[in-house]
Image 1 (cartoon, rainbow, N blue to C red):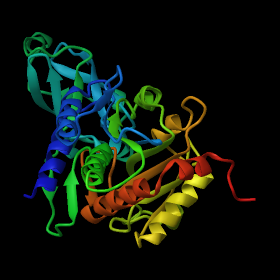
Image 2: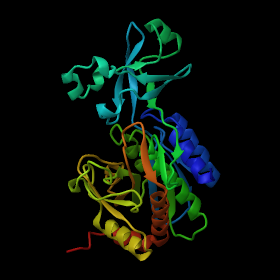
Image 3: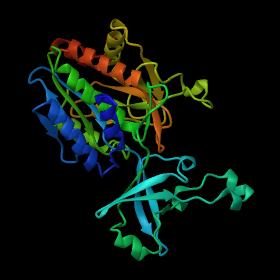
Image 4: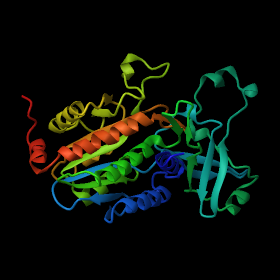
Length: 360
């Protein structure tokens, strides 16, 4: 496994539930400090590495957190009820392995499900509500659960190992949303060390994106960028059951450029600048329109007096489940595009972008 794959493995397998990002925060901090002597942190756990000391302030940020759960109740028989942290669909949860993170250590469990033999016809048709699900850690009583150090409020994370598939460009893991973005910002910070640019670049990640874009507020106010890029994943539409109305995005088709989501419409000048740069360097790209969700850019662009912002994503299959899949080519092309954008940005270009949208 090469160094980049090892980095992907570390990022995706490290736990980072919303509000409990400590482990992946430390991993990100360790990696950033290997690349730069200057890091910036907010008081919630957002972090960025800095490259350059003058010129426009350019923020590239992923988010550290992953969709997870929280223990809300321990039954007398030793089962755990849970609250989702982020958006889940009941169909993808039952019989999946999870890990409860307690003060005394990590405990493996499974989201319980009935055997098909005892399901009625009506039960087979319905999606079980999450509030009726439970985690089984093999305990026989509430007291036994508590002896393990598990308490109400402890986070629960999915279990899925990182794996390179038979087509080595296809990579499967948990938490590509959004460790894909974390990987991209680290690679961009690594590569701009070898390039000349006229900016102060901040490459990092926010916290608590999955529960309301919360860390995007604190990190953007801490850094006060002139231009911001939110690096995330988008929904791939290249699997059976997806329709033309779901989009045309696919793994291996290049980075997704966000043209619309429920939290933001990108600044038109910046959008055109990104498109023109991609075309100039022969980088294929895909357009992403996502009416049903938002990204950290939804908060970045509202910081202070307003920040021209853009979402640059990687297509992913099966996000917001225990396992998802991305293309290594898309990760590489996204890094290349962002490096070329940084090289083209300077004070004059940023001021032109900040001006009123140039189209009439």
